Length: 197
Image 1: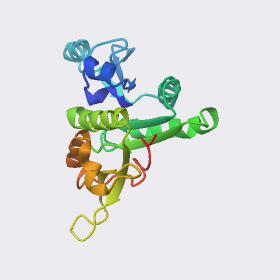
Image 2 (image 1 turned 120 degrees about the vertical axis):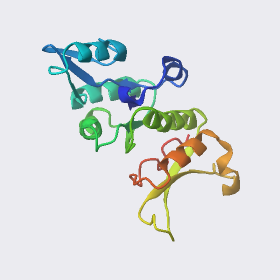
Image 3 (image 1 turned 90 degrees about the vertical axis):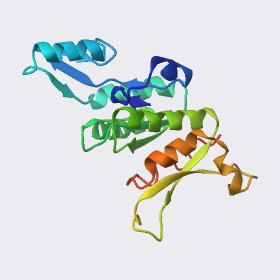
């Protein structure tokens, strides 16, 4: 899953069955949900027509929880990448929804990752996670050591049981994820055993 700020194409969303949590637009006293009630192009026109009334906001925790409910019908493990928490409250809304889901969706594992980015960069991270999930990958974060990035994390795929780690890179989609995430402070538990089957 990801939010609509990730700018994934409909083709990729369909191909990898990626759930999208829409952000909210407010214009002229009305609420619009991105890609549900309005397209980004239409939202931009509203902005141009009345920039003073145009505002955006993260989805509510309840909207995020509804996204988790829908995703849980198809999967018992949900990985959600959000726009940077430095740009939006989306990460916090998703985390709150994850807490609400613990009682309602108790057999579902929900991992949330702050992308520390937005738009295509965020989308590439979400897409890499979706591709890895489709390939049955087991992804983990590893702490970088011995350099100025100590305390930061990078992603690595962990080899399937019975295979050695030198073959762990065989899923090319993770190379994108590793490249984007290198040197970015991530939750060290974000990928832990998330996609193992």
